[in-house]
Length: 339
Image 1 (spheres, rainbow, N blue to C red):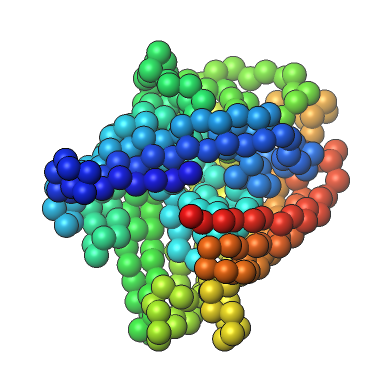
Image 2 (image 1 turned 180 degrees about the horizontal axis):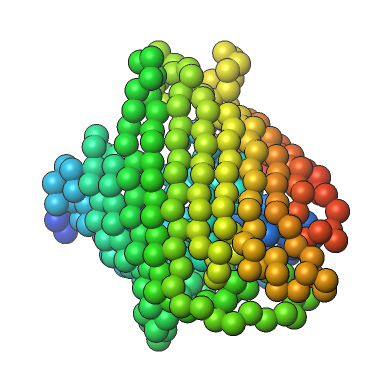
């Protein structure tokens, strides 16, 4: 459940908005069965990767200082702010695999649900620069008040500039993160699940960083609706070799509004990703637990059955980082109903 309260309409003051995010998951999933480093279905990792649970993962208070500046604070669902056009990132309309929804070099430094504050500079209501400080503790199913900042802080900054190529829109972006927290390269997060049966240990290490690049470029924009477009996208990233489990990453693909003229409300996507697993993680127990890099391909087609009902068949081919686990073919269907 996602809900945004307009403070002015609620009788408070102009420019105030409160975003609330509640979510539930039921039962078990195939996330661990694939042997992959990154969850094959990221939505099933929220708010936790196993079991049945409901949680309020975000209560973010936002205040517009002007049309070009926004400040925010609260218990923040950071994934809600991962936005890369065409991919469906930050929503449940596009890809399912973590590697095609976010740049996973950030998995060590950026939690999923935590306390934080920051600001964003806007251009035509689209963020072009942001800076935020977050608690390093991931606390989606608890209040997090009793552990706030007891393991340092994470600083996240993003630049995402609109571009134009042959009169068609696109973006070029950079994201940098730094955490003062203490971790091991097996410290789990919602984006990284080392899995059951891992008995090796690694020494803790203080501090972690990442740097990522992303782009998208439309090849077609509907003359009737500029939001309906399709094109290419890509992501590159690098992080420290320890304690980050992902040392480098790359992805690319094509996605957007269906090119079928009679299905202009449908969307589609085809993407490939490669995850360079950190050398420190590979060297933990090369005989007991041989690990390598990971790669995968995902294809989906999001059918708009009605304006409020979407059905998405999806297929993935995954070559996991666990070398003793076979390659996987995952077939799934996602349903989404909007109220």
